[in-house]
Image (spheres, rainbow, N blue to C red):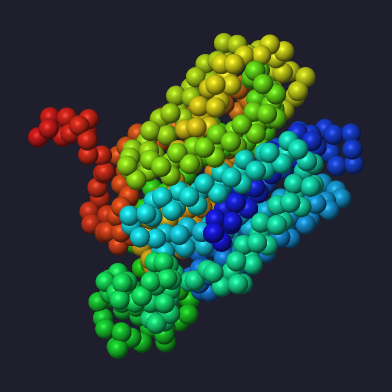
Length: 489
């Protein structure tokens, strides 16, 4: 629950701009945002998130998953308080920047922890449950935006990081067995595993624990000696220049194919998911829905988007064990592509060239249910993506936290670019061109995932790691690709 609360808080943070911008855009009050300021405010947290994400991995590796789960809440506590008391635009921007940094720092503790404590048979479902709380946070913030002011929503959000910190303090969050073993704390690791497997006895977890011990011993000692196949007893690398030693270890751990191959996969997957249409419009979603002339109040649509995202996450929990992550991920990406293409065609034929989502005076008076249905379909398919679940599974232990942080940092860079460039795409190509761009990303993403997304459902982390230790491979293995393989033979 403590990592789940981190995701709940994260979901509320990333969707907060959606309820702030409509209230402050060209507002007559003391706090008011211009078009340009609104564009920057909506994307600022994505710009600062990479700094937190890059810090996240080393922090988790150094102090452990448990302590990190406590400390990463501090930036959000400060940010929510600043949001509530914001007295001018600069303070508003500082608070949003802090939300981004805090969100980035949360990534490695969440993904590392859930992946490392779970048995392979339920890891996919547990990781998806964790993502469910992200959806709850998003839908919760959209709901708060419809019933209270954004300042009150910020104060209510403050309760979430406080609760997560309390769960750690009262001792219900153990460190992961594999991290404890990496620190030489074998007895603590065994106690942690017994606790995590249902307060069971040591005898009942002995087989699993012995496998973890064997795996952890392969990670023990000096990484340089391990690479050179030298016994640790002959290690004298601690006498090496500290900077040289750092770069040598970085080259061994982070620049090996076991890390770089899944890193490329996750970074590209995040790129395609973010640019598949829904994420770039989220900060300005209320106005985008109005600009399309959707047949409902835009605030109601935003709340429904949160509800649909939540329901999609629940469906994923139920089907991921049967469908697997590969089929789910590819289908979700293709569905997003079709939805964005249809929205682009609708905008091209039914919206005036003057329609601009940052200018309410240009919004069409005529309403239609067609773009509403298409937008809801885009939301459903976006909710089916498994990019964050994959992130917790594909990296080797030595580089897991840092590589996850790097992938998350890249995700937020793309989120910033996607959100910030919406206004530019509209100015140059109108809404039809913007969604045509998102459709192109989604179609390319579908092809990429078809060839390079592995199936990790029900497979141990050690086995997943072995996918990338051998020669380069593609993971497409079905009747369609086999037709070409046979013809090639």
